[in-house]
Length: 104
Figure 1 (cartoon, rainbow, N blue to C red):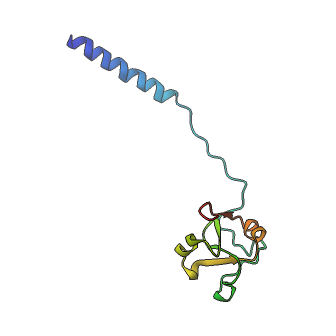
Figure 2 (cartoon, rainbow, N blue to C red; figure 1 turned 90 degrees about the vertical axis):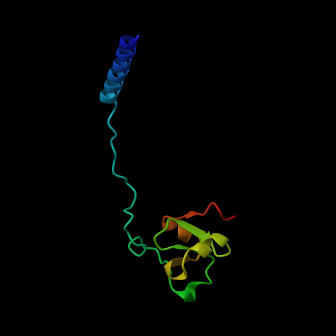
Figure 3 (tube, one colour; figure 1 turned 45 degrees about the vertical axis):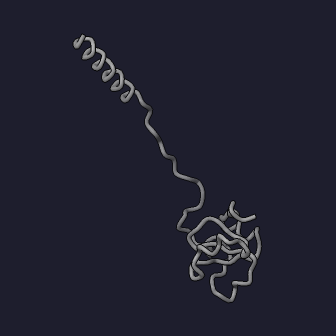
């Protein structure tokens, strides 16, 4: 009985080794999108980041990929010194931002 258990265990180990060896390798391709370190100015987008522009209707975090309407409560999580302001949706989307799914 013990011999049957040991043989079954070894067969299971052997089959796992075979699956591990035959597993396909993952290949990561470089993205064709703009480099994440590209600044908004380099993209030709006039994002505003000083307090005098706080009356513009859209804002987002300098390092983020999302924009928020000024009236969205989720924008409160972004410190005022880390905000970037946009005059329109098209300007925010041209900066590579998407609208926050938490804001209606």
